Image (cartoon, rainbow, N blue to C red):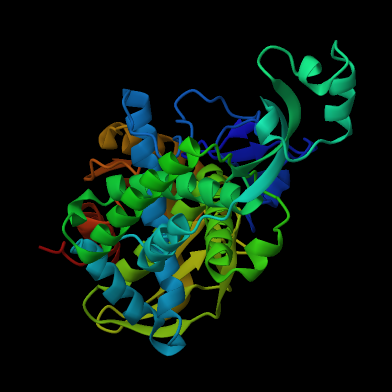
Length: 479
């Protein structure tokens, strides 16, 4: 198995080589006996990649201190924001005829940084502080029967074990058997707050506190906003309640417990149980997304290129394929589309531009580029004359030298482009230090750009993608 051209998360299998477990095959890229598969990030179930250079998922609720932890925390924040941008396709799809127009409006809000990340903890911050205060004022408790040595005058009940202990003591009368302290072992009843429903409450408080801290750290720019203040209020209440419950000797429930009568019938405890399950589900989903965030980055890149193409003056959408929005991600992918994803007509230039995302079939020689995203440019007067641009989404976790990356890709791609209609490639990577560099080798052009899912990094990245497309079409760059 070898690593594909530009992305360490795409593997090329030799003919006859066994298929790795937990992979996502790239459709259409299986010609000439070669197989291409997208891989998850290195982890216990992925021995095919070294963990070197890949950060581990940050611990929940932990403030990053070391440089490695800061890189991991920033990568997790980027993953959340990237997923939010892709999820906005689902919002825009409420009006299928105007899906790209609505998506562009939503992304422009993200460019202005006036939208906040919405997660489960944000929804719970609306009502759960009130529920938590109500429950802490009326915590359920039980009377537990325990054995303890107490004075004779306090004895109210003795069980078999207490009587066996008593008859084994020396003496003939009860007073003699009670000894000089006049104390015997008897049954006493003690209040205990360590019940099943309170253990669930404690588990939710600890998890909600950690989730709220993570959300607040990733949305510091919104300090003072109403949504931020609600999450901060929930974090404060959950922290205080968790401390009080620990002082009362209440343990924490483990995931997968069967709910008891109180958790199903008491409205407030039921709300806590449902909130706890929702946070656990979100955690499991985030664990999976962390491993497959390369595929989510590909989804983001496909939408970014489509919107950048739409932003070219005179571009007219003439066809958009049916989209299937997934309620749960498929190894990091949130939507599937038939071919092509979108078709634009540039009337003034007389061009038809198709956006092909994970195509089922590719032209001869295209498979060697291992690109999940393609642009095909066609002249209306010469429908057979097509030229293609490969787009490589690249997930990175450290600073990228744009020129070196473009230069390396151009030298390799120039060899692969012989006898193909591919003359240009675009590398869209997740380097937070955004920018653009272009290198040409033997007539093959490669442009490397950085883009982020929010703010100026998104705005500048979209502009750079648009400039590459304008250059291919023969237009000048945008100001």
